[in-house]
Length: 456
Image (tube, rainbow, N blue to C red):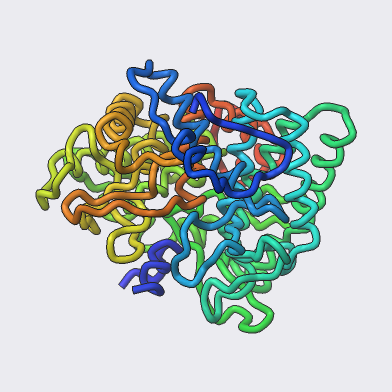
């Protein structure tokens, strides 16, 4: 049995527009006027490809701007109530994705720069006083109080991977908001305080050549969850090696991340060779979360070419849906994408070898940098053909299953964020350029033995 699964798989186990977009410096209350809500989700027809991409990014951004927690500005975990999580539950990783989405919104002038900076300052000031554990944040946090909301009975404190997604966004913000003005200077300084205070090497459990996902003052290391690849945790090692104050050694990367029975692969699936990872690649978010900031173009080390890895993983996912071996309704060249999401009977990490007929729009849309033609075909189908069912005030619903005649009544921060950011990376490379130019990141990548066009 595989010793280490991704957190999303563990979660499954544990739980078994162009128009009408209004922005302000403050997060507005939920709209009470039903007509206003209906106006907000009107779907313009016959859009050009660029206009459609604009609309999808912009509408999806509303999740992080309009629906942010009013006290902290953090991203709420989900738009519906499920698994006993209510409106107060904010996702640390999803908030990192929301920060990156806010940078996109600033660059595209959907929000005023000062408004964006002030929102981010509110978030950062809140995080400076919120619960953390050796500078590492929990998976969920109460957006009003800053108190940890346990993810599980023992998963009640530091979550190194979710914290990685947060810092992926924070460091991009520090790089982007670079004007010599008071609020931007303050934002950069406070992000640096958080960054320098995060004790990544604490999670080596006293200097072992291992990196652990969780630590708790109540339960110590009892979850015993080593972060081994290949999965969505690549960013964790890059950040941990890049820390200016509490960095890990390269030996941790080589002896933990790169040593597991699901790291190297090398086999072919649907005629496509997969260098790393689970059979058939696993859920598609492996190619998204880390690579919202890390540019895989030309990124190589002794183990893989990471553009080849992500492209081939995506292609296997696409080909599986086109071939549709289980004959699910709706699958095809224009309807594909298997990843972790809500589904008709709970939550599941969908993949070609764990396929129950549920398509998650974030999978194909966040794959735009890898498969732009296939992703555009999927986007047009989702919007033009299925939009009456799956398009809403925060963009596309989390998932749908035509075989079960089911559509999610939810959007999730960790699924909405990658849509905005990865489409932007496809269009302009904005987040890749920001993240890969950070001096600490370049040093961390060099330490781990990477080649990249960005590394000087």
